[in-house]
Image 1: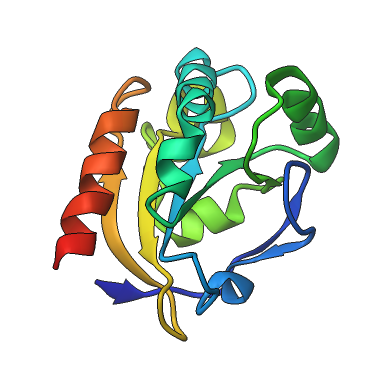
Image 2: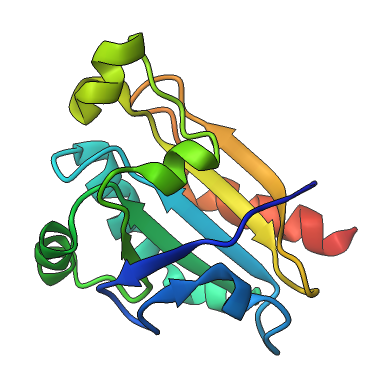
Amino acid sequence: MRDVPDITLENVGVGPSPYRLADRTGVPELDWLVVLFQRDRYCRNCRRQVRAIADRYEEFTHRGAEVVSVLPEPTAVATRWQDVHDLPFPLLADPGGEIGEQLGQPVRFGRFGERFDLLGRMPLALLFDVRFDQAVIAYSHEGRQPSDRPDVDELLREIDVLAAR
């Protein structure tokens, strides 16, 4: 587990805006925060992942977990994404991808990949333990290719394993 910097981003989905990670620590009934860093607005794997989680979101909330999706796009684009997908959890706009970069979102192809999200940016899933005053990363999955991301069952299993410790 490692400490993380605060995350503050505009939220176009359910919940407060701006969304601050620091505000989610020590909240009764909230033990875990699953943060999914998406590749970009065009990513089909990203859309499938958030839809699958939305369909089973109650399983996360029963475990004291909140899911947050971070889209490396301007707020207006993230708003359109939310209008289409109607996610039951926060959708944060990270226009320059700075937070994803700060937290280690993988990028392929060097400078070329950094310039073109569609080709370079890979998915990242982080599971934060937010039961105490400081959020810590308890699990991470760094995608090596666009489809390399945890499915719903894997995320739920990780929460269960961590909660049993």
